[in-house]
Each structure stands twice: as structure tokens, then as C-alpha cells.
Image (cartoon, each protein chain N blue to C red):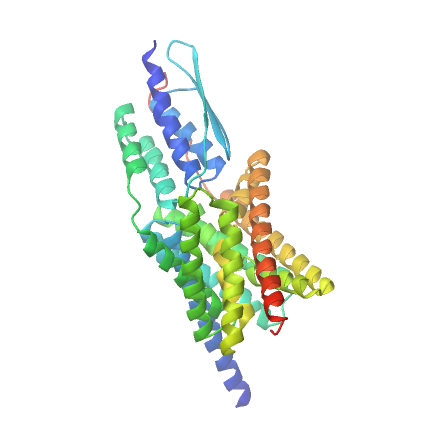
Length: 258
Length: 161
């Protein structure tokens, strides 16, 4: 077996880390090609779609090494995407061996999350509080959006543990984000409900899928662009569905007092 | 005198809008596991973009145009910032776009539909869709424009096998 085959492992790991953590497909292709060239291969081809990657390069003996990998999307971690990109840039500047690159990529892969789930929930609460004011709410709206968003994310984490994240998590989160502020307002009359509810829904909107769809499409990758756009549309439909169910249930329970 | 007071009040509220959208973006940057050194600049870009959108609406600008210009500004600033900080542009662009995503419009659409006000619901839904398309245009044109001015040296990897 030719020794050049071992270069496939770092190329695949880099591609998988970017794709799993929310990077665009064009970035996967660019990074793999850049790394392949830095390893010294003249012919490197990478084709990525949101659910998988195909990589091939011509080895020193003239044969082509090809591999395909299915990638399942994980939680978004932009620090990892940035770190992999930084390694590929570093490889352009200095000569790194296959083992050194592999070690650096494994360190990124095994790096524990910098923040605990509690901290992430609070960060999301903070974000919703800010958006409540941005949408025309005030102190109470910010406070309620903070609590409800934190709670909704907690539920999403629980569903994640039960392997029910994704669309079910979005639907449940939006249902809670709609019905809880409505009940709070029913009992206290303190909220600008539209602002508070919209702030709770904001973190669940598919901003990442939407920007990825545009970025991929602008670079001519229609397949990935359409796939990301479809994913964004489905998530938006779940957000809308959750809000609609929350609104309807509230009206059924209270007779539509708001 | 009253005009001046009104103007000062509007500017003050504009600052609150900027600050609140920046806080919203900051929290979201943490949640998305963005690199720590990107949190502050990304949230400022998010704040500036949304403040521009809000300011344009205050002078009765056409809403789709306002959101397009805000997205364009966010996209350009995000890419310039990424280049300056030697980080990937997606971090800044994504976070700049987040405050512009029409969450309120989408919610209003659903609220109207739940009340049986289908005409209003469809109107709010179409308006939200137009906003999304405008964000995509602004983002895309910003990315394309920056790339036109970007000079990248030819890839000179190590010795070719």
C-alpha cells in the first residue's frame, strides 16, 4: 500500500469537523483543497453536500485515492470551524507533517465545550432579553423573554438527550415561547406581548442555514444552497407551527382574551 | 424647541435599539460557540446593522430597501472584520444577520392566522418573506462585492508530488 494513502485521514477529519459544526460546504471544499495542495498533491478534488463529503487526490504512484463519508450534523460550534480553517491556513505558511496536522485536528475534535449547558441557556436568555427591547418591549418583556428562552432551551437540551432534538425541539421551544408570555400577560398585563414572544422565537429561527444557503449559492454550489434553503424553510415552518399551536391553545383555554 | 427635544428623544431611543440588538447578538454569539474574541465585534456589527434598519424606517424609507441596506452593511462590515482579525467571515456575517431575521413578522403572521384574520396573516407572512429575500440579496451582494476587491495570491503549496 502506498504511504500517500495516509493523507486521506486528516483531509476527511478536517472536512467532517467543518461540516458537523455548522460550516458551509464551499468552506469544506476550499479547506480540503488547500490542505491537499499543502501536503504536496497537485490533483485534489473535494465535493461536499450538507450530509456528506467526497475527497480524491492523485498519489505519488499515479493512482487516485478516493473516499466518501456520511456526515451527521451536530451542534453548531463556530470556534471549531474557525480552528480547522486556521490550521489549513497555517499549512500554507509552514510545512506540517501529516501526523502534526492529524494531532492538531484531533485536539480540536476532542476539545471539550468551553461553556456548560447552563451557561449556554443563560446566554440564549440574554440574547432574547436584548431582542425583546429591540422589538419595542421594556424591562418586564426583557425579564420574561430571558426566563422563557432559558427554559425553552433547557427543554431543548432534555429532548436532545432523548435524541428528539432538531424539529421537535424547535416546535416545543416555540410553543413554550408563545404560550408562557401570553399567560404571564393575562395575569399581570405587564407585557408588550408581540415583542416578548418574537424575542423568544428569534433564537430558533434558522439564521445559520439561511446564511449558509446564500453563501453556497453565491459561490455557484446550487445543490448545497438548495439543501440549506430547504432546511431553513423547514425550520421556519416549525417555528411558525409552534407559534401557531401556542396561540391557538391559549385562545382555546382562555377564550381569546388577549 | 419641541423639534429638538423630539430629535434628541429619537436619537436616544436609537441608541437603545443599537444597544439592545448588540446585547441580543452577543448572547447569540456565545450560544453559537463563536470564538471569544469575536463576541464583541460581532455584536457591535449586529447592533449597527439593526440600528441602520431602524433609522431608515424612522425616515419612512421603504422597508425592503431598509433591510437590504442593513444586510449589505452587516455583510461588508463582517467580512472586513474577519479579514482584519484573520477569522472566518461566516462568524461575523451570521451574527450580523441574526437581528435582521424577521421574527416579529413571522410571529404576527401566525398570530393573525390563529385569530382567523387570514388576510392580515398572509400580508404579514408575505412581508416577512420579502424581508428574508432582501437579507439574502444584501448578504450575497455584500459577499460578492468584497470578493471583487479582494486580492488573493495564487496558492503556492509545498513541493508538488
